[in-house]
Image (cartoon, rainbow, N blue to C red; front, side):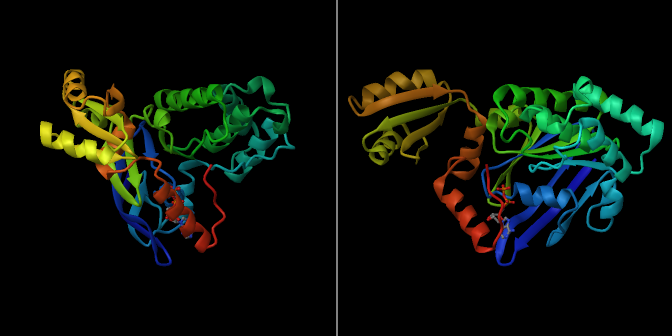
Length: 324
Ligand code: ADP
């Protein structure tokens, strides 16, 4: 359904994407997960035909995003982070104008608006101005707008930004319903692990590279065993002593000693006994997507260095986009 091949993008001398390839299947809920500056928005803009990559190709439903952007736009629905509905118009009026842009008219358009408002649970509010809606309802109108022309693929850029947890959950439920009942392929960018976990498959990006691709279950399973985190006054020294004594791979990440180990609960008493008084706190957990990220990149998802490097790049080149 969607084929991304060797996509490279550079802003002047700054590399934003370093050769990304993946496929998205029909009726799949696919996530692009990555921290600030990892290249999500750049990839999103290429897929939604707003930007041409430096090299590589992106095809949706067999249509090339670079060679045929006009044709492709009829097959995709796009929901941007920024509001695109007119708050002074009613829900119905917003969709009526959107329909005209896509050549829908009269009875056919009326029927489709009713259908889509029912789908997003806002039919009873069709006559109300969008400015009277809650944040979650406004996002659902954006969704309705993106879906009005029956696209086979829906692209959403961080769609839950600014929503409270209840509205977030609702929006994800709508995305799942769309996938299941309308067989729409959905690509959604996110920097939130709990959202990424809801996707059928994920591409994890870091500094313009694809660092992991697969179902959330397969990615976390790959780590195997448990993750142990230890706090100590001198984490470097403790990590070294653990490595020497137990011949395990102990790393220091963000001032904590971190180990990936089978049967973590059995290791805990051994390590505590081996270094009495040195360990200030200890946790054992099943691997999460955050652990997948650390495993693949050697650093935490939110590292300050990556954050500031991303911001410097944007400011230097005059982009006003701010991560929220
Ligand atoms: P994300 O959406 O994951 O935060 P972006 O695609 O916005 O990532 O950014 C990827 C990289 O490209 C970052 O290093 C960022 O600083 C840089 N970048 C993004 N937009 C611009 C721009 N308009 N001009 C120059 N560099 C940019």
